[in-house]
Every structure is written in structure tokens, then in C-alpha cells.
Image (tube, rainbow, N blue to C red; front, side, top):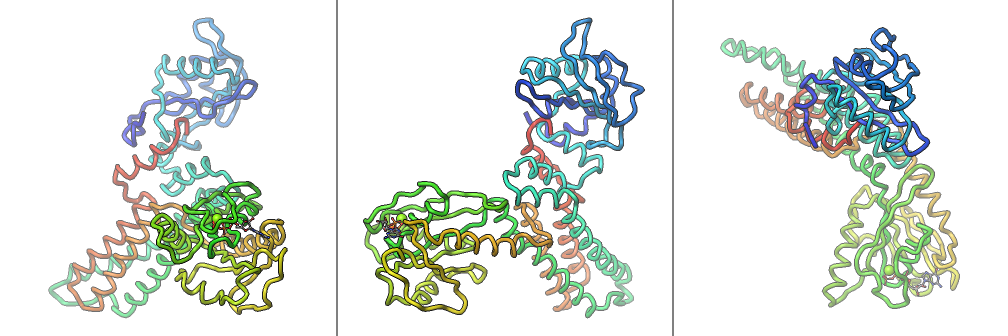
Length: 458
Ligand SMILES: Nc1nc2c(ncn2[C@@H]2O[C@H](COP(=O)(O)OP(=O)(O)OP(=O)(O)O)[C@@H](O)[C@H]2O)c(=O)[nH]1
Ligand SMILES: [Mg+2]
């Protein structure tokens, strides 16, 4: 059931099981809307209509003399509530019967069952949260490790929204001057110093670009930092994957070309999620399936944050790893480490490279694995754990990319001295795209999409 954003503005009092509980736990049933306190009161043994805000009252849920449960009713008065409306929360016992019956009683009394995300969409519509914060509520509920949780909390505090609003404000000032010029078009005046404009646009582009670039990190924190394991066949890539995960995830065999498709899995180390990706061994081959596997391996390497390039100490002594890594054509931002494997049989050649850290391990004997993990963690902390604002949401990223394109158009327009109204229209475009991020501009379909991804009761 999705009532969309329109449901949230029908003014009805809504209710839902907000926090379900198992036997022995306490379930929270949330009621929100103009009639919340009187409706809740009509099913409670004590009158809640004079209860002060943020106060819990112990009593019984009762209807026509029939007692359903002994419970707490907590009253929250508008506007100091999550939704911005009067709210009552019942803490009832976690029996499936009591939970569903309590909601049914509330509906019989005149509440409407809340749609997915409807409490949060009401909070947004009542100005309690901006869109990025509302989305952060969804992220918070979905966060399954410390890194994702920390990002969601940061977004919920509104840091990202503040930065977007600051950008908008500067742009609005700029747009105002341009519009003023248009009003005096006949006089052919320029209120807005072109050179200053260009400098301002340069700064805005830099900030928007930095935010957009941070999406790569933001996404990595949420979905797991992608670490791809690459190398020629039989070097021990699958053995290393299993060692890193501490699990028998991929098939290991002495036959070169064992891994055809990519195999990946995540694990959380010290609060940071990593996504390890085992790939097909890279070599010349006529085999169509193997070729496809190799293509996928190179693809994964390109989108990875870290590439672990595996060499075999027993047979790669004469190979130049730098050349092989160069052939992978990696992104400039991708970090590579050289891993000499099978050092239980023979030690690795004593060569080091300036920009490529190297490790000597035995994946089979699980030796040297913790050194790789420590290195990965140190890198991830440096990169993902700092205080700068990080974009984690694809919708925000797309908004930033569109803003950047509009700002670039504006800059080109100014340089080519195109008429002021065209420049002004590009600036309005940029403002529009920034506005869609925080919800300052709210096409209904965007809002419905966001809130329908929530679950009922939130
Ligand atoms: N002695 C020794 N053997 C190893 C080590 N790691 C892997 N092997 C062996 O090397 C062979 C290949 O290992 P895999 O992990 O399947 O190698 P791979 O790189 O995934 O190979 P492909 O999937 O074919 O590309 C197996 O027989 C492993 O047991 C190691 O550290 N020491
Ligand atoms: Mg393999």
C-alpha cells in the first residue's frame, strides 16, 4: 500500500505498528495527526487530553469494558514532535494478537492506517526535516554496519543539507543580479561584474564537483569498499579471497582457469564494510566463456577502490609486475598493492616499487593476511573516516552532476557573452537541480519515490 505524498497531506490521524516486538518485548504503536490525543484517549483507561508533552502514562488499553493490555501511552504535543503533529505512542506487550488488535481498535476509532514512510513524509511536509534528512532516516534504519550508521547520522544532523543550502544561497544572489540586469536591459548596464561572476562560478563548480566526487567514497562506505583480486591464473586469487573472508567462498583448484565468473562477498572489519571480489585469471585465451570472465575481471578492477595484484613467488620471479599492473589500465584513484603469494614454498624476489606497496603471503597457510587487512583498514580510515561531507545517495549524486552541468553552461555563456536572459535561465536550472536535493523544489514523483521505499510505521 502506497498512499504517496498525497496521503500525508489528507490531514487524517494515522496509526501503525512502528516497532514490532517478539513475545516478551514491547511494541510501539504510533498515532499521529490532529486527533491523535483524543482518539488514543478514547481507548485508554486514563484521560490523555490534559497530559503534558513528552509524558508517559501507565494504564490499560480498553474498549467497551474489554481490556486488551496494560501499557504505557506517551503523549507528544505539536509542534515539538517527529512529525510536527500531535502524537501518542503506545508501548504494548509483544504478543502478535495484542499488536494487531491494538492497531485494529485505533482504526475502528477513526485512525487511518499509515502508508510506507508516512510518518517521515509528514515530518518533511511539516518542515521538521529536509529531504536529505528524511532519506537519512531510511538509511539509518537500513544501516547494517558502523560506517553506514555514522554516515546516516551525519546526514540526519543536516550537514549535507546545510552545504547545499549555502551553495543555493550564493547562486540566488548571483541570479538576483542577473535578473536585475534584465530589468534594465534597454539601458545596457551590467550590475554584475563578469570577472567576479566567473570567479564565483569557479568556486561553486569546485565545491559541487568535490561533493559529486565524494559519492564514490560514500557509496563504498554503504555498500562496502570494493577490493578486487586480480592476477594470472593459478596465482591463488580464490585462496586469498577465502582467507580474507575467513570462509570457503570460492572454488580453489590446481587447474588454471578455475574461476570463470567473478565471486564476491562482504565482511565488516572494525566497523568498515569491505567487498572482496575474486576474478578470473587473466591470460590470452580462445575460450569464449573464459574471455567473458576476463572481461568482467577487468571491469571489476576499473570500478574497485583497491586492486590486490597477485603474483606467484614460485613462478613469477622474472615477471615485471609494474608492466602487468599498467596493462590493467586502472583508474587514477584506484590503489594497487602487489601480493607475492606462495611464499611458504619459496621467498619472493627482493624488488620494491616506489608507488606500489607489496606483501609476502601464503594464502594457503593464512600467513600475511592480517598485514593486508591492517593496510586496507588504514587506507579506508584515512579516506572514508574523515570529517568531510560525503554523498551517499544516488539521487543526490545525480542532482549534483546536473547542477555541475548547468553551472558549466552558465560559465560558457558568460565567456561567450550570450544574452543575459539565457545566462539567467542556466542559473535557474542549476538552482532547480540543487533544490531537488533538499526538497526546496518538490516534484511530487520524487517525493513519492523516496517515501515509498520506507516501511510502514516509519
Ligand atoms: N603452496 C601454496 N599453494 C597455494 C597457495 N595459495 C594457493 N595455492 C594453490 O594454488 C592453486 C591455485 O589456487 P587458486 O586459489 O584456485 O588460484 P586462482 O588464482 O584463483 O586460479 P584461477 O581461478 O584458475 O585463476 C591451488 O592448488 C592452491 O591450493 C599458497 O599460498 N601456497
Ligand atoms: Mg580462482
